[in-house]
Length: 179
Ligand code: CTP
Ligand code: MG
Image (cartoon, rainbow, N blue to C red; front, side, top):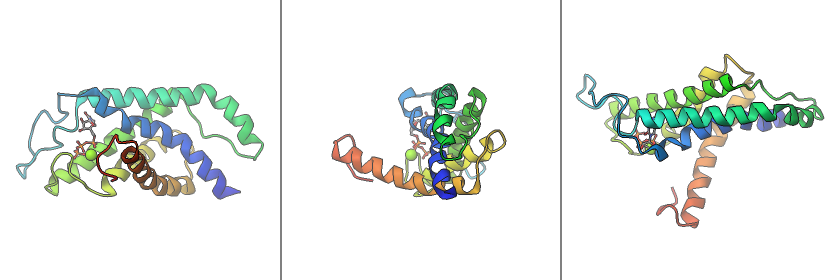
């Protein structure tokens, strides 16, 4: 069924995007992408939460996950083929465009937050969770196959996964609050 295909194939794009979004904090970056500069409103362009180190690690992680998918694609295609589906194109390059798109989307989100006077790390529900997916889709769309249904699933799944992982993080005591 078409919807089921779209649901399954969505993960193919989501994994590299999630990797690009999850790894930057581990870089413990200290060199902000905006070089500490302010915008016309006197507030930071992006803020200290967007660093070159985080950017590099996110790009590396997302591209590696894409590369891993590329290597195993023939295997997944034999399974998908049984349901008449084909995995979307995946290469190191496609993985890179997903990761770069995710990180650019994330930075666009920070730019918007700063304009709304939301400080670094401040909560912006949906904006925080959807900007990187929007960026990942907008850039990789030109290099792989992403249907409108896949887009829909990716936008629906991401806030749910975000919420779920926070609850799990709270239960296993990695996080102090369940949101
Ligand atoms: N990070 C980074 N470089 C990036 C993206 C993220 O160094 N390009 C690191 C930062 O240490 C950041 C952390 O990952 O604090 C979490 O990322 P995110 O939630 O996107 O940043 P916030 O600190 O919440 O900042 P903002 O309000 O601008 O989203
Ligand atoms: Mg944040």
